[in-house]
Image 1 (spheres, rainbow, N blue to C red):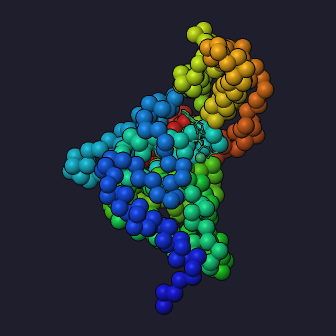
Image 2: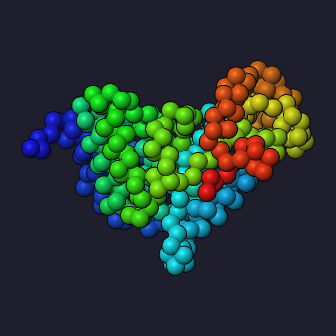
Image 3: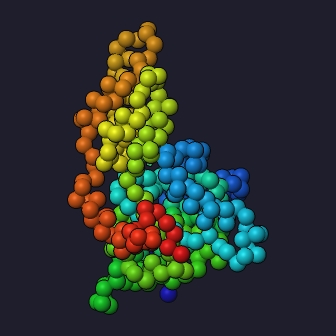
Length: 328
Ligand SMILES: Nc1ncnc2c1ncn2[C@@H]1O[C@H](COP(=O)(O)OP(=O)(O)OP(=O)(O)O)[C@@H](O)[C@H]1O
Ligand SMILES: [Mg+2]
């Protein structure tokens, strides 16, 4: 029997986005990013990797290992290659979600972002059903990139207690992830906690590659300041190297916020003097903003990430975990 409650019907209606959205999709150019109900955070700008400061090694790796395969399907087929499913992990605010959205812009095929709330259900087995629906919907829209953000909340370690309803949800994911790429569903995921994910999910064929996204180094912090300030009225003599030095231990979102703090101050100063040109953001104002913002990732959290990284990241010749890398 397939009787659905109103809540389930409403969810399914939303999931299929109704006739209007289906129609819209047909009118969308083939290389456009599809934004459905689950895509509240879908990319607004579409400059792809040009919007990404630093992360050069990561960009190169994802371009060679993932994007090139998608963009050269005929050749990839001859070599029996499909794009690997990727899991990005690392400290908060270091650009995992942002980077995946930029990959979607680079690739230009359909894109579907799923967050844990999209799958949450108050019904027993409701979540399990939603997981199946998400993959069925993805299959209808293939080729498609499907991005599971905060993945650990969707596929937690299963327990030995058979009554635990979350076991069923993880099982459903295991089943759906199996060789999804063969159906044209390319899986990307992000998490702060790979250690909370069920081990069976992290098996090749489900998640093929596990990639650590580190805190931004000095070069990346410098690029971030340059990128953020390039869009704003700022003075010509900013010392980007010094800003990078002063922000050791700050993540990408901290740096974006520091620039925003300075920008807000200059906005307020500018509206007070209406007929004058906009006031520019200066070095001293940025340094002042830095001194008023502490890093959001603590050193204790970073030590914990180092420990997790030793477990999940590939090792270099010296036995140390590499910052980023495919564990092939
Ligand atoms: N490489 C980058 N270039 C430009 N901006 C960046 C970069 N990385 C991060 N940002 C900025 O930092 C913000 C936070 O990044 P994001 O939300 O992707 O972090 P996250 O790693 O997913 O964090 P969390 O683990 O908390 O989900 C982004 O919205 C973006 O503005
Ligand atoms: Mg994120």
